[in-house]
Length: 159
Image 1 (tube, one colour):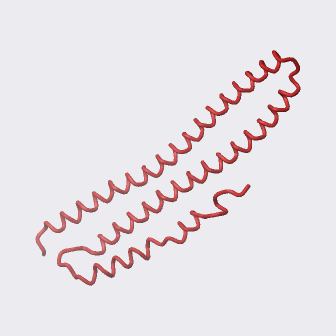
Image 2 (cartoon, rainbow, N blue to C red):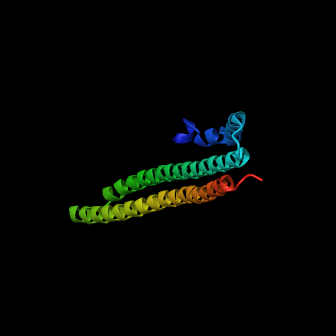
Image 3 (cartoon, helix red, strand yellow):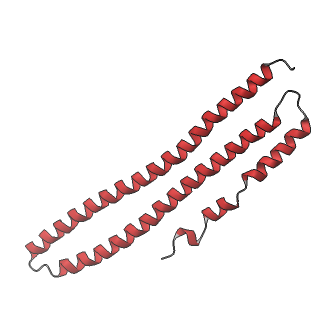
């Protein structure tokens, strides 16, 4: 069974993304304007950190998504194997009351496994989202501090 990575490799795409190149282009563009009192280098450095944080958060989210898809494929394979065993067990159960009892037991087991699998997948998604969000939140806070510093430097009279 071919996984989604066989069709589209997102991690390869992310590796080819170069935030440094984008920041370099931004730096060149801003330096052309020669704005008095504006520290272009600090603005560019801040934007570079923003792009790096965004890239990191995206990478975490994509890796989390890939892990969930992989686990879903494993669960599907496991479910198919268990369904095959269940059919075999039902065919050997004997009398109609025995078949009904076996069917109820198998249904209960399948339901409990499905709940456990859903819980596991939800936890995987939640963990990935928390990691990506944490990266972005940290960068936003740092970026606001950097903007404050730039604004305070603009406020100070030139020496």
